[in-house]
Each structure stands twice: as C-alpha cells, then as structure tokens.
Amino acid sequence: MASSIRRPVKLLYFASAKEFLGNLPSEDYALDDSIKTGADLIKSVKQRHADNTNFIAILDRSMIAINDEYVYELATVVLKGGEEVAIIPPISGG
Image (cartoon, rainbow, N blue to C red; front, side, top):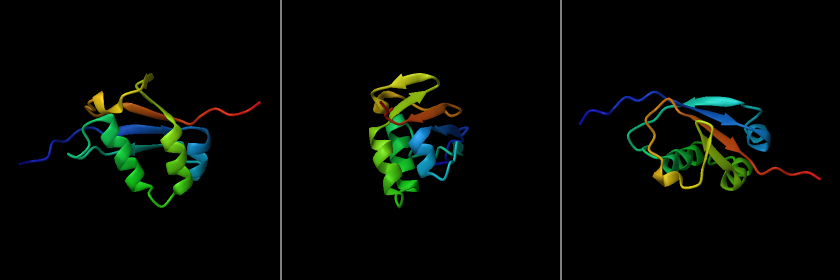
C-alpha cells in the first residue's frame, strides 16, 4: 500500500520548551502514516527528542493548541497536514 503524502505540520515552541531545544522557535514536522491524530504527533515528538528529558518533562505539562485553538483531547483531533501546532508550557512567575 502506498503511503499518503500530507503536508508537514509546523510545530511552534514557546518559553522553556523552546529553551530546552536550544532556542528552536519552530520546526516543520513530516506526518508519516503512523501519525494520524494530535496524540500520535506528540508521541512522535517525544520519540524524536527522547534524550532531552527536560524537554519531555515540559512537554508532558504543556498545553497544545492546533490552529490557534487549545486542544484538550489530542486523540480526537485528526491531522490533515498543514496545521500549526503550538507547544505552550505552563506559565510561572509571581
């Protein structure tokens, strides 16, 4: 079976997520056949950065927005390709 070709999503990193990735503000992320939902995408991002435990810890506590909408149930969001996915860490301060 031929793999379907979808446009990559753009991952946007903010605050500590960005810092733990060496100040990487964003990256295009190819969607292979195993990435169908938002939950699949986050699992794949964790695998890509598995050696970066600080980033993984922040990712686990971050809010995710897809196309400017916060998503609370990532498994219910089907990715078509071309989406903008923001990783928004918890806000801290005093």
